[in-house]
Image 1 (cartoon, rainbow, N blue to C red):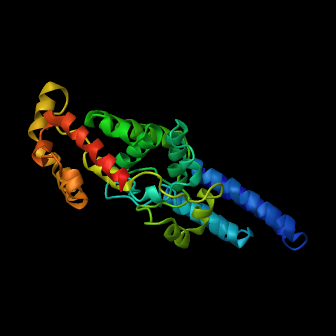
Image 2 (image 1 turned 180 degrees about the vertical axis):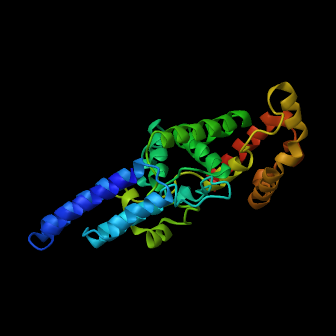
Image 3 (image 1 turned 135 degrees about the horizontal axis):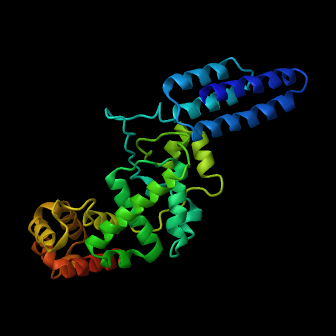
Length: 307
């Protein structure tokens, strides 16, 4: 397959050589069109490093425009043969936990509708998300739920339901990736802290994801989101299926909810007497007190809204 692609590049280069001096505008147009053909072929084929070398040699000796050659080389850098991976060959996990600040205005415009989740998924896929970390999956599933059904509805969901949502979102992403969308133009192991930082390092990627709509202002309460994340498991505890598993989770409450307890304690101390009224943090450890925890979530959310 690599030889076919290399032969195509050589044939295209022959045509380009005839246009380079006689018709520079046509030469640039054909070069750009053939660049797109090569990039599409690279996204649809799984080439080994030796095969990529064969294609790269054909590109290097071609008379493609310099910017088109560079674009093809950048596409090669995102193929599986060149994608960063761990010692087992598994693609490197991607941390997109800063994505909240990247969501475009157009996506926020769909808040409160079923289109929000789909628009958000399309955006992160275009941004290059393929192999998310567990915290990223947790965040994305919560954002889809909050953006579609609202914060209070998401907070009233049981931990098991929120965990099931995370699993469903991850399967959804896997189906999209397996559907043949190809490798991202840039592999981001960790998303930048701000859109401006992404623009400075990868201006072409920034331009492509924000061509229709710029980054929008965050429209959900970040303190409430972090509170919710702290009380949403990222994976099921061992032995958690069935009644025995529920007992195991109840017994493991103080351990698995420790992070959330510390966050709640910090929030209560920050908000002062308004939130401390009648709340006992010791109630948060056991799974049997889920209704109490939900009431506390909603109570604190109402206080945050009044700030």
